[in-house]
Amino acid sequence: MAPASEIDLFAPIERDVILEVRTSKMKTMPGLKIETGIDKRLRSGRVPVSFVGLDADEHDLVFHGGPDKAIHGYCCSHYPTWQKEFPEAATRFDRGGFGENFVMQRMNERNVCIGDIVSVGDDGVLLQVSLPRQPCFKLNHRFQLKNFAPNTYRTSRTGWYYRVLREGSVQAGDEIRLVQRKWPKWTIERVQEYLHRTLDDAAMNEELAAIADMGDESRKAFEKRVEKLKAKQKRAAGAEGEEKERWRDFKIVEKKVQTPRISSFVLEATNRDPEEEEEGDVPLGSHARLKLPNGLLRSYSIVSGTPTRFELGIALEDPSRGGSAYLHNTAKEGDVLQVGRVTADVKPAGAASNHVFVVSGIGITAFLGMLERYQKIHWETTLHFALRDAAADMPFRARVEALAGSVRVRVYDGSKGERMDIPAIFDGLPWNSHVYVCGPTRMMDEAMREARKRGMGEDEVHFEAFGADTTGDPFEVEVRSARKKEAKVLQVGAEETLLEVLRKHFGDEGVASSCEVGNCGTCRVALKGGRVDHRGTSLMEEEKSDAMLSCVSRGIGRIAIEI
Image (cartoon, rainbow, N blue to C red; front, side):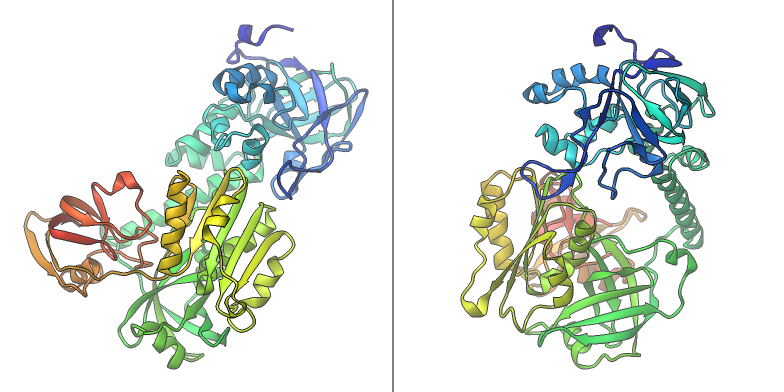
């Protein structure tokens, strides 16, 4: 066998040898509760091949296995490169490390094409290349390297999947031969270029969406991009160049008391859009902006639902600014409210090995849908949930209790003197954890201090505020328009937000907004001069020099912005 350094991975190749055949049973990952089939062991002798893969090979069927992912192939010539690039994990980069079934030396992502049909050995096995392998956090955990997985698709060293066209048996030493190549321009590497690196090429997305031999996972991703692009073009054509907020009528079809302070509301569009029905659930961590009959604009976290029917959980604030009081005391089933933008500001941290939620009271509404999703896909998840009185004040009790088992749930009952110990939670974080925090300002501030104390980056902790202090000293703002040459100088009072002042002078469409507590970043404006008291959590530290959140942040003295 030639040394890896002597192998030209770009050389066309029509045959190779299967050096090893590997399979595994499901096992618990070290340090986690979840099970995985990544730990493939060598098989000797002939191994039966069926339409769902190799004999005695088990998969986590959420992400792996099935007809399109029956067998995983990987080029072992990549391992020496990984060892050089990550010397601290060099001993872990060995054959079978990526959970591959077939170990090959020359076939790789640069000379294997989507749709390739290959024969294996002399027992009649016929396979077809179906998908690039999509890496997940388990590679990070296996190699003990944070955020390692994205390197695999950036460098196109992921491996690929086969579907089985004809059953039989295989063994190490069998020759694998190209029988038919239907899509010669679409190597695995080139597919990954548009799947992961160049996402906005409309022509390539359309072409890839039309490859019938591509497995559902990737083909549907391209199809969805094509649909979104067409919808965006349609909206742009109808908006005459301006993206205006679209207000639609939604009926309250269910109002339910969850606790003495919290009620849930199910809202359903009066005119349902078939295109939206096909989009599925709203993104995790979404907010809906409501225009209430009393004229107030408010944003609330969507617990779960679709773009045309979703559920909100709303606490009666004390004191109320008017929105929660109206919904609790006046709104009833059958009433119609207007709903504007639905935006999402939480991105699931797919590279993390552990997901730790730190939540108080109504804060569960921001993350409940995410917790349920993580439960379904078998991500390692822990919920720390603080309540004034666990017996009386737990909203969505049945759904929270249904998490127990696969999700570690720790409830802190204030009525029994139990207190959530934020420093202890951060001290006990397992390796490669992502933390999600939602609660009152005092709890959020403590969590932020603990995260900074431990050097945790902004990509390791997500803060979701359900209230924000927006008051402060009055300031002056020079507002420049990206479309107009003249500038206006406006005054922002001690009790006003910059967003409110901009709306008074430029209308509701002057600056877009959604959550209005500094989580989502929709209200971001360009900062052109002056000092700012930055509040909210959606701006990265490096962004604060040239941007601010108009819903919560305040200028110091005089500032200049552009909208």
